[in-house]
Image 1 (spheres, rainbow, N blue to C red):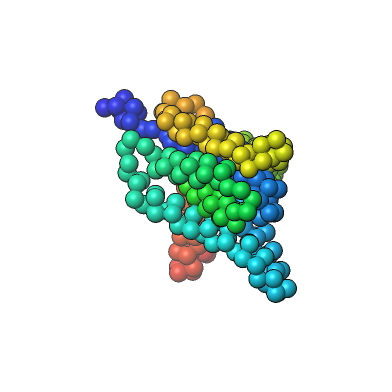
Image 2 (spheres, rainbow, N blue to C red):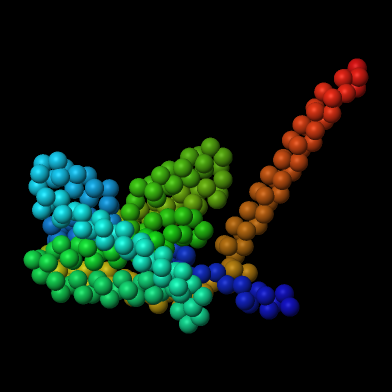
Length: 271
């Protein structure tokens, strides 16, 4: 019976580092594509778009403000769409719902490759929509929360984990920091490759992102056996150990507080 349960207990490849690696490369490439080729608009960094939109609004340049507002709106709709897909198809058997998200991304980005620069507004909106679906659907790598299309959260979490390692020597904190810094490096690498690809391939360079996402789609047909994965087993063992230690400390503290309360209610026992 236990052997059967082990066979049924699967980890999800969509949260593996291999998948995150190709997603981050693709995310960096998409941002470089829209910024360097599609009119200096950010596909992922909506904070930058909000700043530039606000600047143009205050300067009375309404057409330029719209240039940044449309991708921002598309990003919001992309998050909504990905969440609706999760709710509708979470129990799907043949495919994982995240594979549907990746498939939608591939189709959308492939279409963008045909758009001339006169349609930059629409192209940027579609890429932002695609990025939003990705960042909403893929939110963990090996159990750590992350973003594959932006770096600020990953940098904060990476530095927090690095501080934990420096202060405590925790191997888990070191592993966590390495995960985040690797994701940031891969995002930057994807952005660099995207900027290089633009010169020879122009609008078609976004298809490089499609190829990376095809790899992700294929990877998600692979499932990791948690019970047979030494790395995951080690993390689970360490987590259980930490939980037992925490439980022991809480029990001791509660016992001490109980004793102090009992003595305060019975002053004679103090003597």
